[in-house]
Image (cartoon, rainbow over all chains, first blue to last red):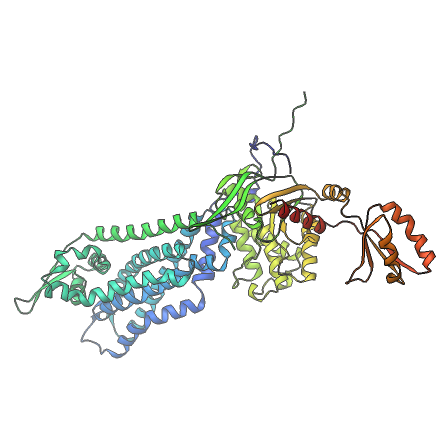
Length: 315
Length: 323
């Protein structure tokens, strides 16, 4: 065997190739590659936008116009909030994020990535940034097409309000669901497993909790409030943030969403008088709700990054 | 007193160990290996499961080091600085199949730290050098195995690494593909150091000056191929001589009776006489005499060179015996 050479200590700084001095380049390259080749494929964009536009377009096609000039949020606010941004958009984001890391682990391309001069934390963050851009593209494109159909059909007012409000809200939805899914994507090497929990969260928060909300509020002597269930109700926090964004555009926005907000714990209904009166619950300030969601997403990304850092990667 | 010039090895490891923790059963894949690679082409040999891939994966930072230290040109293995110095081709490289060859190389170049235009330029240059220029706009999923291996090598080279690490670069290739890859590696070895692992010894023999043999996670031998052959040929166990005449059956009986022949037999594959000689000079003198006396035609008489494969098998078998 070869004689052991003493631990080599570098005496003089190595002359680094001029190419390799820019450390931010690998991350940018990964963001670009993830966005163009993994996320923004023609097929994915067409399918995503189609499902995002489908129900609002059907409503625009079949719901007769109200008399006079109508606010677009009045007609499409509820469906855009619930169908688009509580169900369809999270599913698109989760479905697109799930394979971002786990597919690389499954197929063996992660071995190639980790052999390059980019840290694993930067790999996960680059992919997350690409996902945020993808979320922006899908939400903007869908909302733009919905608005286009709307103005072709009727003379709506305040199109920009509808577009701006939901676009901002879409960013938060992308941040939250993208964050938790990319965390799970780093934990599992099967894309299917990475999707399961975030999808279950969507179903639980926006379908199950919503259905059982009247029961929790009234039939159980208000367990929702007594047991502080709103703390864990992601649907409540999302509604709270949405209302905050909406009110910054139009202080009367709540009136268009009273029924749906009741289902998500934002307002209480008093049936002692007729017509029933609605009162805001104000469990949390919207900023707290926003910080809460960002914290969950951040924790998931951190757990994912730590897990990826510790993982032995082989072909 | 002459001061010794400071020497930074291409690869340096000290008691490098990898233990895979699999629940109750832990597997020691690499067991305290000390390795020093000097500039040049260094072969890393071992049977399947010997720990070659685990060692390489620790050196590139893909898997954690359980114990010990490893450095690449003075930088800690796995660090971003060390990875800048390495070009790596895994055993079974996976690609982003939906990308074309050119798109893939450009991406890899940028990932390696090249500016966009430089990556584009370098990608074209490498595609040309590795005869992939015509296929540059074709998706990688449509490439043959040989083309995929070449694009893998191009990807390892695009950021101008100082050390190329190739893990079984010829596995899954047909004979022509293998020959081409060996040719490419030989060409590259003039520009940079190459660390190549394989269990196909004839290929290593063609490419490398120095080899390290690893078995069951431990280094068995590190030396130049020339030295290894010299040492093992002198041990006498490999004095094999091959003889082919017009009547091998007639001669075999006579040969078996000679004192300087330890063993002689007619090989089932080539139908020639194979002998293990105790005294090669005596044999060389006796053969012409026997040919004339028996009135047979001599077709071949030679002593095959001891191959690295023979030595490797001998070493591994010795290891098994010593356990």
